Amino acid sequence: MRLHEEARARFLREAQTTKRVSEFLVNIYEIADPSEARGAWKESLSLLQPIVQDSQAVAHQSAYAQVLLCLGKVEEALPVVRKLLESGYRSPDLLDLCRAKGLSTKGLPGKRE
Image (cartoon, rainbow, N blue to C red; front, side, top):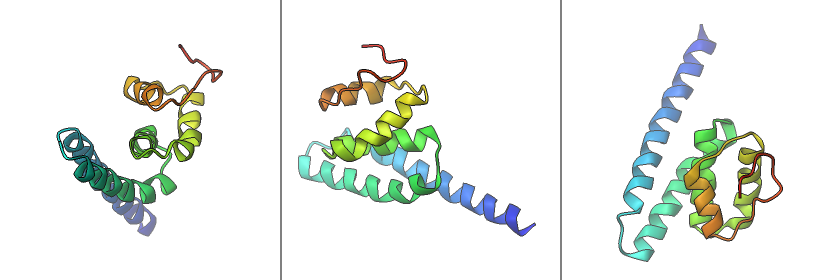
């Protein structure tokens, strides 16, 4: 029974964090001040890092990769992006952001460029 309670608590924590990150990501695009937006991206990253260490959910991994790319951390994002693409994940938002940041994903399975 304890294992079930721990799993439920973990799920609820992840769901709350995912909701907070989603809200941040939506609101960041409305921020006009670049330094304020960068601070919001950094806050999103700090929320996502503990989640992606424990979760392989593509939504979490994709959000993490997108935040890294928006912060200019292309080298850190590359392994996450590669893993997502190799798994067959194809988010137009992620692909567009990769292109905008100069991240080539050519040669990966299923790539349509």
